[in-house]
Image (cartoon, rainbow, N blue to C red; front, top):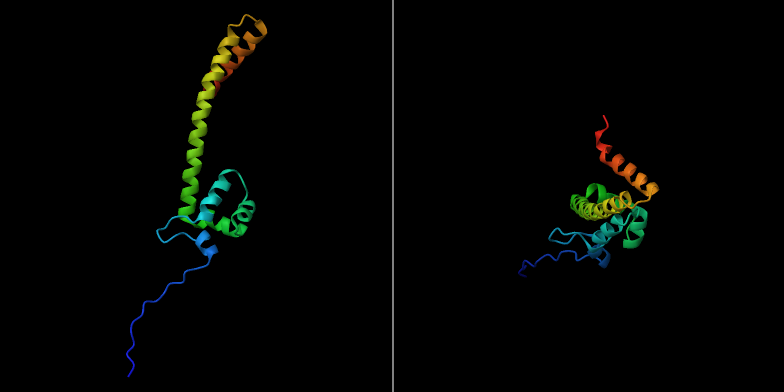
Length: 129
């Protein structure tokens, strides 16, 4: 009689494409998903992103709308970009105010009036009822 040995069942290793498009075993985004997020943040459409990363437009759409890990990472990265942009805008605002201040006191009535009008416009922008 032949003895049957319990052999381990080998898991399907998947294709190279699977390795790029499927999350890894630790629940991290795939290489294609991370690249797709980079492209989406550049403003590309699902179709363009799919062509770049080698998947269909529908796959990119499903990642965005049905894959919580992907959607959360996309939202987190968008917030990072917005926060960076807000910081840059604040720094530029300070420089713009300095320019207005210089124009206000430059001695040329045309520039002084324009600067004063802009300052008053923005200073009272939030006062509308």
